[in-house]
Amino acid sequence: MAQQAAEGGQRPAGEEQEEVIIVGAGPSGLAAAACLSLRGVPSLVLERDDCVGSLWRNRTYDRVRLHLAKQHCALPHAPHDAAAPTYLPRDDFVRYLEGYASRFGLRVRLRREVREARFDEARGEWVVDAVDLATGKTERYATKHLVAAAGENDEKVVPEVPGLEGFPGKVLHACEYRTAKGMEGKAVLVVGSGNSGMEIAYDLAEAGAVTSIIVRSELHLVTKEIWNLAMTLYGYHLPLWLIDRIVLLMCHVVFGDTSRYGLRRPAIGPFSMKINTPAYPVVDVGTYAKIRTGEIQVLPEMRSVHGNVVEFADGKRRPFDAIVFATGYRSTTKQWLKSDDGLIGEDGMARRSFPEHWKGKNGLYCAGMVRRGLYGSCEDGEFIAEDISSKKKHQTKPDDGHEKKSN
Ligand SMILES: Cc1cc2nc3c(=O)[nH]c(=O)nc-3n(C[C@H](O)[C@H](O)[C@H](O)COP(=O)(O)OP(=O)(O)OC[C@H]3O[C@@H](n4cnc5c(N)ncnc54)[C@H](O)[C@@H]3O)c2cc1C
Ligand SMILES: *[C@@H]1O[C@H](CO)[C@@H](O)[C@H](O)[C@H]1NC(C)=O
Image (cartoon, rainbow, N blue to C red; front, top):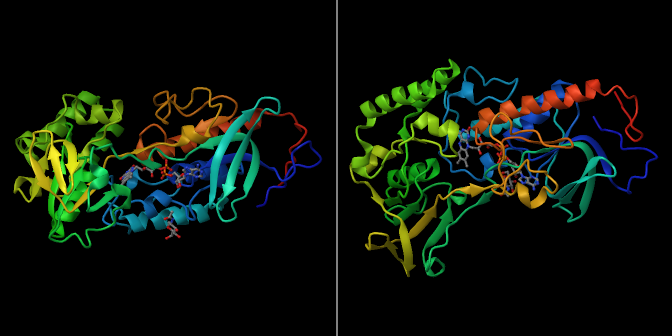
């Protein structure tokens, strides 16, 4: 469904007019586009990579699965197949995202990197510059509605460690790690004990690498079954403190006292933590059992690197063959989104908390920027599409001078 570009305006040559521009073809961008499409609002999605769901396809390790049962991980209006596994493997989820884009006939323009989006007060619309990575040419788009859906995890974060540049072995970030191939028998240090770090440590140990993991901060270890129960209880509107109590009790039965193995729990309960802070509990995939048997060693923070030797906060030193930094990501939205009027905070995430987070001024929206996972992608898609379509319905002015309504 090609939208006809504006006719006879004072529009710069080559500029394309769109009703809605969505930046990013991850789950959030696709959900927003589909929700809009179902309300009869056309949109164009601009995506830097050459596929949809690029984070899932290109920046996750092979063994990753969705942490929540499939009914909690479906995008709007497209439940997962009854035959699909309860916890979807990565490749199934990638296929699901591709199917989603084609099922709703979404218009996705690939290999377009948005470099700047700014609100033009005089024209009362957004001007978006995107580079076509195939040709290097800059394309200009104009739009009434802009949806920032470029993800919370766009850029890897690696801490500065003195001496790291002289480390002779392999250094990777979690987003570059696929499998433990080639690591058998090697001494590997995993830095960071979030979900990625704990799972990559398991993957390495399972493959026969001599694995250590740095656990710097407190963490809540849960099982996926316990976590799904918590999500269900949340759905029944149980108070957070009660969900926390139930989760902790069950965790105690399954794991015992995790602090005996260097995994201290935060004072805040696991579900309150998920709802009220940026932190997320760690869903155990078998790492804990390997920590208990000593197959995976828990180490304190790293202080410096000397050749292949890493020195830790407790003064101990050990040689390693490889280091995997599972030290997180940051959003890059602030780099291209200008004049956002406070919708996005300095950290690149939505500044306001749920459910006030998704709508800015002048037709600006953000999707998937408030750390609510795939569930948040769905919510935001529906909120945004409803807002844009109701605005259009009330806008009874027949013509604003430069937009030609078709079909
Ligand atoms: C290893 C790992 C496991 C995870 N597991 C889960 C899980 O089990 N459950 C869960 O709910 N969440 C999980 N998450 C969180 C996950 O990030 C989100 O659920 C989901 O991918 C967010 O979708 P999104 O569309 O907001 O962001 P993304 O998937 O990151 O998509 C953003 C898209 O925007 C594109 N983009 C960025 N900048 C630009 C630009 N300037 N111009 C054009 N395009 C751009 C990117 O290429 C990308 O395709 C996991 C994350 C990681 C890293
Ligand atoms: C992502 O994966 C696709 C499909 O396999 C591939 O064509 C593309 O080059 C990858 N992109 C990056 C940035 O690695």
